[in-house]
Length: 136
Ligand code: ZN
Image (cartoon, rainbow, N blue to C red):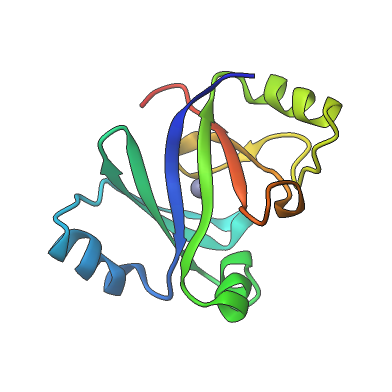
């Protein structure tokens, strides 16, 4: 399995619009894409930072995974995403190595990426996302 880079850092927020005051208004990062992923009950907003991006995540429903995360832990860093060359191969390899996975097969994420999450029990509590994209 080949990890190419940190693709993005996912941050759970109550409001993308309010948070953008800091990430864009104060830090000067550009918001390049905002998208709702209905299956995940989440709206995402991407702010490129060099080779990587900050991804803000706002829940679209009180029972969505991001809403539940904020309920338990408050706003903050929710996951780290690694860009991989081939996500199907990576998942097979991790499964063979006995790593607990949330997604055994990839699903669709924001921007048409293929994504899959590893179980935080296997990663010292860090929610790790793998993602594969056709383009930058
Ligand atoms: Zn993500």
